[in-house]
Image (cartoon, rainbow, N blue to C red; front, side, top):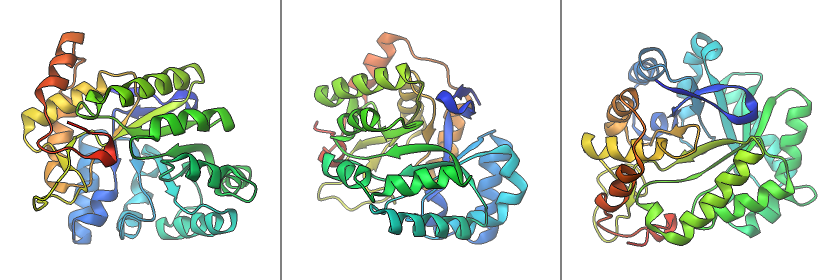
Length: 292
């Protein structure tokens, strides 16, 4: 699998990150979960893991595999707690649940509005706990993640307030049809590149929302499911100036994502344009900025 330099971290991250949320959403036995980790890390060459305390029991499920793979992976986790003390306690809990002494990347989780950014960057906000974690060797790098239509503009402001090492925000061919989101994302990507910030883009398969239909996947958005559509969606994303993309929480598409990643080659500008026009959303998802 292709690897790209994750900004100033110096880590050559696989273009697909193992989204460990899949371990906590799929009601897996420990044996089955460990086979999935082996599939991603050892068989497909993924060397970057994304996990969070809110992902069910994913930390407890992943922990037994870590001693065998820690030397191979860049381990990123997050805290969604907004105040310093609560975030510090949450970070300590993450270490205990993963049974590790440190991680490579510690991120502010789900900073999607200016109000949330104000909360975590104010005095006694969560950012102070993450900075302390870096000072004490708990993490090497500091990042920020966010969802929703305001995420690109919020993260652009975040980079002006603190020198984050990485960002993570949604991008998909369906979201890209939102011209305002596209414009703000391009500004963020330009700023991130100029600051040598690692760029992680999630929701790779997001095509729309569920509306009044009954969800048949574990993701809160409606994802692409067919191999051909997953190919085009992932290849479109990896043809943008990003570094890595976390896989989704829907286990039935994981092997298809890995398959597509192994066969990736950049799309031409025309092919990218065709992808955004071809993969239409059946229903909008305003929570991701997918409006048509």
